[in-house]
Image (cartoon, rainbow, N blue to C red; front, top):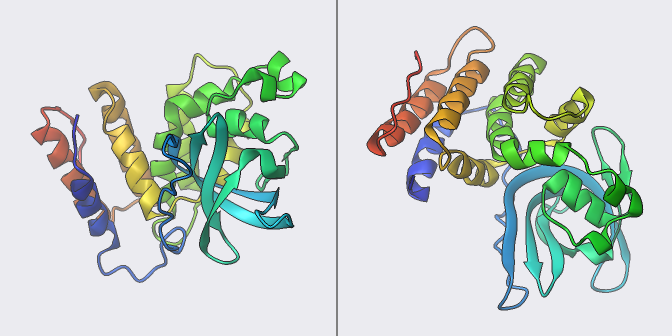
Length: 264
Protein backbone atom coordinates (compact mmCIF):
# COMPACT_ATOMS: atom_id res chain seq x y z
CA UNK A 1 0.00 0.00 0.00
CA UNK A 2 1.33 3.44 -0.89
CA UNK A 3 -0.54 6.28 0.79
CA UNK A 4 1.46 9.45 0.23
CA UNK A 5 2.70 11.49 3.18
CA UNK A 6 0.81 14.53 1.95
CA UNK A 7 -2.43 12.53 2.01
CA UNK A 8 -1.80 11.51 5.63
CA UNK A 9 -1.10 15.12 6.57
CA UNK A 10 -4.26 16.21 4.75
CA UNK A 11 -6.31 13.80 6.84
CA UNK A 12 -4.59 14.89 10.07
CA UNK A 13 -5.37 18.52 9.23
CA UNK A 14 -9.06 17.63 9.46
CA UNK A 15 -8.51 16.68 13.12
CA UNK A 16 -6.99 20.05 13.94
CA UNK A 17 -9.34 22.24 11.93
CA UNK A 18 -10.56 25.13 14.15
CA UNK A 19 -9.50 23.20 17.23
CA UNK A 20 -9.18 25.31 20.38
CA UNK A 21 -7.95 22.57 22.71
CA UNK A 22 -4.19 21.95 22.79
CA UNK A 23 -2.69 19.12 20.79
CA UNK A 24 -1.49 16.05 22.75
CA UNK A 25 2.03 17.49 22.95
CA UNK A 26 2.58 21.09 21.93
CA UNK A 27 4.50 20.76 18.70
CA UNK A 28 8.21 21.51 19.10
CA UNK A 29 10.42 22.27 16.12
CA UNK A 30 10.54 19.01 14.14
CA UNK A 31 13.83 17.18 14.78
CA UNK A 32 15.36 16.72 11.37
CA UNK A 33 17.06 13.36 10.98
CA UNK A 34 20.55 14.51 11.74
CA UNK A 35 23.25 12.98 9.59
CA UNK A 36 25.77 11.42 11.93
CA UNK A 37 27.75 9.88 9.09
CA UNK A 38 26.95 8.85 5.57
CA UNK A 39 25.99 5.37 6.77
CA UNK A 40 23.39 6.50 9.35
CA UNK A 41 20.24 4.39 9.19
CA UNK A 42 16.88 4.82 10.88
CA UNK A 43 16.05 1.75 12.98
CA UNK A 44 12.70 2.83 14.38
CA UNK A 45 10.61 5.99 14.15
CA UNK A 46 7.33 7.47 15.38
CA UNK A 47 7.99 6.16 18.91
CA UNK A 48 6.86 9.13 21.07
CA UNK A 49 7.93 7.65 24.41
CA UNK A 50 8.53 10.11 27.26
CA UNK A 51 11.34 9.20 29.68
CA UNK A 52 13.66 10.78 32.23
CA UNK A 53 17.29 10.45 31.14
CA UNK A 54 20.74 11.11 32.57
CA UNK A 55 23.38 11.30 29.88
CA UNK A 56 26.79 12.76 29.13
CA UNK A 57 26.67 15.66 26.68
CA UNK A 58 29.26 16.32 23.99
CA UNK A 59 30.87 18.83 26.36
CA UNK A 60 31.38 16.05 28.92
CA UNK A 61 28.78 17.33 31.39
CA UNK A 62 26.05 15.13 32.82
CA UNK A 63 22.56 16.27 31.82
CA UNK A 64 19.27 15.29 33.47
CA UNK A 65 16.23 15.80 31.28
CA UNK A 66 12.81 14.54 30.31
CA UNK A 67 13.28 13.34 26.74
CA UNK A 68 10.51 12.60 24.27
CA UNK A 69 12.07 9.82 22.17
CA UNK A 70 11.16 10.16 18.50
CA UNK A 71 13.39 7.67 16.69
CA UNK A 72 16.47 5.45 16.92
CA UNK A 73 19.32 5.80 14.42
CA UNK A 74 22.26 3.46 13.87
CA UNK A 75 25.67 4.50 12.62
CA UNK A 76 28.93 2.53 12.59
CA UNK A 77 27.43 -0.07 14.93
CA UNK A 78 26.34 2.51 17.53
CA UNK A 79 22.77 3.51 18.33
CA UNK A 80 21.57 7.07 18.80
CA UNK A 81 18.31 8.33 20.30
CA UNK A 82 16.83 11.27 18.41
CA UNK A 83 14.32 13.10 20.55
CA UNK A 84 13.12 16.34 22.11
CA UNK A 85 14.50 17.85 25.33
CA UNK A 86 11.22 18.82 26.94
CA UNK A 87 12.65 21.62 29.11
CA UNK A 88 14.09 23.50 26.14
CA UNK A 89 11.74 22.17 23.42
CA UNK A 90 14.70 21.51 21.14
CA UNK A 91 15.95 18.40 19.31
CA UNK A 92 18.63 16.28 20.95
CA UNK A 93 20.68 13.46 19.43
CA UNK A 94 22.04 11.24 22.22
CA UNK A 95 24.54 8.43 21.75
CA UNK A 96 23.38 5.29 23.57
CA UNK A 97 26.78 4.67 25.14
CA UNK A 98 26.69 8.14 26.73
CA UNK A 99 23.45 7.37 28.61
CA UNK A 100 23.90 6.64 32.30
CA UNK A 101 20.29 6.06 33.30
CA UNK A 102 16.82 5.96 31.78
CA UNK A 103 13.74 6.05 33.98
CA UNK A 104 10.37 4.92 32.72
CA UNK A 105 8.28 7.86 33.95
CA UNK A 106 5.01 5.96 34.33
CA UNK A 107 6.31 2.94 36.26
CA UNK A 108 9.47 4.40 37.78
CA UNK A 109 11.49 1.47 36.44
CA UNK A 110 15.15 2.39 36.03
CA UNK A 111 17.45 1.11 33.30
CA UNK A 112 21.17 1.55 33.94
CA UNK A 113 21.99 -0.33 30.75
CA UNK A 114 20.64 1.82 27.88
CA UNK A 115 20.76 -1.08 25.47
CA UNK A 116 18.33 -3.06 27.64
CA UNK A 117 15.93 -0.13 27.36
CA UNK A 118 16.43 0.29 23.61
CA UNK A 119 15.65 -3.37 23.01
CA UNK A 120 12.87 -3.88 25.56
CA UNK A 121 11.11 -0.52 25.25
CA UNK A 122 11.95 0.73 21.76
CA UNK A 123 11.92 -2.65 20.00
CA UNK A 124 15.28 -2.22 18.31
CA UNK A 125 17.56 -5.25 17.99
CA UNK A 126 20.74 -4.87 20.02
CA UNK A 127 24.05 -6.72 19.95
CA UNK A 128 23.75 -9.37 22.69
CA UNK A 129 27.19 -8.42 23.99
CA UNK A 130 25.85 -4.97 24.92
CA UNK A 131 22.92 -6.29 26.93
CA UNK A 132 23.06 -6.99 30.64
CA UNK A 133 23.31 -10.69 31.63
CA UNK A 134 19.78 -10.49 33.01
CA UNK A 135 18.38 -9.17 29.73
CA UNK A 136 20.18 -11.92 27.83
CA UNK A 137 18.87 -14.63 30.16
CA UNK A 138 15.27 -13.40 30.30
CA UNK A 139 14.00 -12.29 26.89
CA UNK A 140 11.06 -9.95 27.35
CA UNK A 141 7.90 -10.97 25.47
CA UNK A 142 6.74 -7.37 25.64
CA UNK A 143 9.33 -6.56 22.98
CA UNK A 144 7.18 -8.58 20.58
CA UNK A 145 4.10 -6.61 21.66
CA UNK A 146 5.87 -3.39 20.67
CA UNK A 147 7.16 -4.91 17.43
CA UNK A 148 3.66 -5.99 16.46
CA UNK A 149 1.53 -3.08 17.65
CA UNK A 150 3.89 -0.19 18.47
CA UNK A 151 2.77 1.97 15.55
CA UNK A 152 -0.88 1.29 16.34
CA UNK A 153 -0.38 2.23 20.00
CA UNK A 154 1.27 5.53 19.02
CA UNK A 155 -1.48 6.40 16.53
CA UNK A 156 -4.33 5.48 18.87
CA UNK A 157 -2.84 7.30 21.86
CA UNK A 158 -2.55 10.45 19.75
CA UNK A 159 -6.31 10.21 19.13
CA UNK A 160 -6.90 9.61 22.84
CA UNK A 161 -5.24 12.95 23.64
CA UNK A 162 -6.34 14.97 20.59
CA UNK A 163 -8.92 16.91 22.63
CA UNK A 164 -6.34 17.87 25.25
CA UNK A 165 -7.43 15.16 27.70
CA UNK A 166 -6.20 11.60 28.23
CA UNK A 167 -9.38 9.91 29.44
CA UNK A 168 -8.95 6.53 31.09
CA UNK A 169 -11.94 5.06 29.26
CA UNK A 170 -10.31 5.90 25.91
CA UNK A 171 -6.96 4.50 26.99
CA UNK A 172 -8.77 1.33 28.03
CA UNK A 173 -10.02 0.97 24.45
CA UNK A 174 -6.42 1.05 23.24
CA UNK A 175 -5.42 -1.43 25.94
CA UNK A 176 -8.12 -3.88 24.87
CA UNK A 177 -7.18 -3.49 21.21
CA UNK A 178 -3.53 -4.37 21.91
CA UNK A 179 -4.58 -7.34 24.06
CA UNK A 180 -6.74 -8.63 21.20
CA UNK A 181 -3.74 -8.40 18.83
CA UNK A 182 -1.34 -10.19 21.18
CA UNK A 183 -3.29 -13.12 22.60
CA UNK A 184 -0.39 -15.46 21.81
CA UNK A 185 2.10 -13.48 23.91
CA UNK A 186 2.67 -13.62 27.67
CA UNK A 187 3.32 -10.35 29.51
CA UNK A 188 2.05 -8.38 32.50
CA UNK A 189 -0.96 -6.14 31.90
CA UNK A 190 0.74 -3.49 34.06
CA UNK A 191 3.61 -3.38 31.57
CA UNK A 192 1.22 -2.53 28.77
CA UNK A 193 -0.59 0.06 30.90
CA UNK A 194 2.70 1.73 31.84
CA UNK A 195 3.79 1.84 28.21
CA UNK A 196 0.54 3.45 27.05
CA UNK A 197 0.72 6.07 29.80
CA UNK A 198 4.30 6.95 28.75
CA UNK A 199 3.32 7.55 25.13
CA UNK A 200 3.04 11.24 24.29
CA UNK A 201 2.66 11.41 20.50
CA UNK A 202 2.87 14.66 18.60
CA UNK A 203 1.61 15.22 15.07
CA UNK A 204 4.82 14.19 13.31
CA UNK A 205 5.05 10.88 15.18
CA UNK A 206 1.33 10.29 14.63
CA UNK A 207 1.82 10.71 10.88
CA UNK A 208 4.79 8.32 10.89
CA UNK A 209 2.92 5.72 12.95
CA UNK A 210 -0.25 6.02 10.87
CA UNK A 211 1.72 5.50 7.66
CA UNK A 212 3.23 2.31 9.15
CA UNK A 213 -0.17 0.99 10.21
CA UNK A 214 -1.76 1.62 6.82
CA UNK A 215 1.00 -0.36 5.10
CA UNK A 216 -0.12 -3.59 6.77
CA UNK A 217 -2.64 -6.24 5.73
CA UNK A 218 -6.32 -5.52 5.21
CA UNK A 219 -7.20 -7.63 8.26
CA UNK A 220 -4.99 -5.56 10.56
CA UNK A 221 -6.14 -2.28 9.03
CA UNK A 222 -9.77 -3.34 9.52
CA UNK A 223 -9.15 -4.00 13.22
CA UNK A 224 -7.23 -0.76 13.59
CA UNK A 225 -9.99 1.33 12.00
CA UNK A 226 -12.50 -0.33 14.32
CA UNK A 227 -10.24 0.61 17.26
CA UNK A 228 -10.07 4.21 16.00
CA UNK A 229 -13.86 4.31 15.98
CA UNK A 230 -13.96 2.85 19.51
CA UNK A 231 -11.58 5.54 20.77
CA UNK A 232 -13.27 8.53 19.17
CA UNK A 233 -16.75 7.37 20.31
CA UNK A 234 -15.71 6.33 23.83
CA UNK A 235 -17.46 9.40 25.28
CA UNK A 236 -20.71 8.47 23.55
CA UNK A 237 -20.41 10.84 20.61
CA UNK A 238 -18.20 11.48 17.61
CA UNK A 239 -16.71 14.88 16.84
CA UNK A 240 -17.26 16.03 13.26
CA UNK A 241 -13.52 16.58 12.76
CA UNK A 242 -12.77 13.06 13.93
CA UNK A 243 -15.45 11.67 11.64
CA UNK A 244 -14.07 13.65 8.68
CA UNK A 245 -10.59 12.31 9.46
CA UNK A 246 -11.80 8.72 9.57
CA UNK A 247 -13.82 9.08 6.37
CA UNK A 248 -10.81 10.55 4.58
CA UNK A 249 -8.58 7.67 5.69
CA UNK A 250 -11.18 5.18 4.48
CA UNK A 251 -11.31 7.01 1.14
CA UNK A 252 -7.54 6.50 0.79
CA UNK A 253 -7.93 2.83 1.63
CA UNK A 254 -10.69 2.39 -0.93
CA UNK A 255 -8.52 4.05 -3.57
CA UNK A 256 -5.84 1.44 -2.80
CA UNK A 257 -8.33 -1.39 -3.29
CA UNK A 258 -9.07 -2.17 0.38
CA UNK A 259 -12.60 -2.99 1.42
CA UNK A 260 -12.87 -1.66 4.96
CA UNK A 261 -16.33 -1.82 6.50
CA UNK A 262 -16.96 0.38 9.55
CA UNK A 263 -20.33 1.94 10.52
CA UNK A 264 -19.76 5.69 10.89
